[in-house]
Image 1 (cartoon, rainbow, N blue to C red):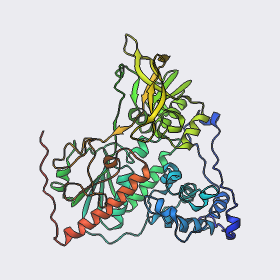
Image 2 (cartoon, rainbow, N blue to C red):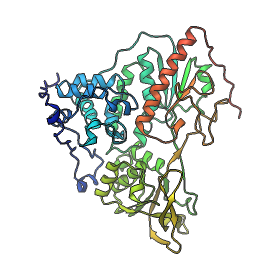
Image 3 (cartoon, one colour):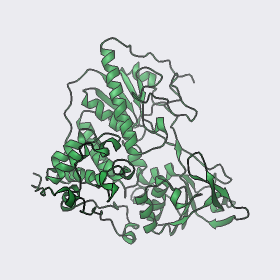
Image 4 (cartoon, helix red, strand yellow):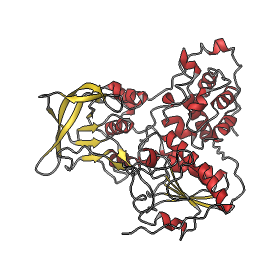
Length: 493
């Protein structure tokens, strides 16, 4: 039985606006760099109640419009203020089935919180922290809740990929009463939530708890099943008898720099580095037999969220010096401010305005160093950021044992190249209708990074939910005989 929680009296609006935003406790930097335990420690019930008081309960809340999955934010926050944590979580789960994940890794500061009315004169309500709090409260009290499901429709839907887009799509389809199977290429479900985001930022047990809720909704998950190798999309419709398919295979193809020396031993993509550490538990070597050699000095090229994850992971694996090499300044870094600040607290050496021009190695094929050119910022480029311009004669070299390339990734081509008739753009991303997420093949839908390119977890979830609505409408038309199941051509070798 969950503890009985008493709410707090509702303060007048003028008083609510003066309540300061509550910070979240974290592990001390010198302690956390020696472990992979979660850095942010969450709110206590007392902090959550006080933070919830800050919400002004706007009549036309802009925060809801800022949320890609449309959570009724004022309602769930008000329920926290009343002490009804279980009701608050139920309200969130009406539109978001992964609250513990979103509360941790979604950039609320760029979405719901940036448009919070409180932010005009004060700090915004800590929406993400409150979402995390009620999700953690459920798990800590041994509870689990699933939304009400519609009666079985008789339709079968295949969801390819178990990342945030696939999970969100599967959850919505299950709500509608459809029989859903998720096909996952790796041996564990979760996609980037499991192999990409480190344990200290998103513990794996939390991802598994959210996925278990999905299986309680009747969703089947088939791991070690590679669409494009094990079978193809057209076979899902033909031999397996599915009525529709959703492709949420993500952006898992790493980009490299195209500079000399990238083939030396000790040069890793961020994908390989994080997958070996996260999914294969290299952080627990030698108990888990998946070593990752870092050496004494590690350089990570790039300054986005993935780069921050790589830098902070290398530090925890025992590297004495961890260096971030980025060709622009801190102001242009695409990483979340919170992640950047955490990395700075952990004594990461940031080399701003620095571009790698060559990777150095020895006769045995191992990395020994990195040649760097200093940069300065010129006029803005197409991204709106000032373009980095090389400073002539400014090259220098540093000794390095391991280099991780974290400059982005492209669409995973396994499913797309084995699906004739599927329209792609020039980058290899699937072309999908912005409203329904339908692709060029009737009955085949797509969303997340495979459509947009690498983006955030919550945007991928929003796309998955949107696609589920499109699929549901398609299946309704299929049942009425207004459309026919597609007959797809087999891929040619």
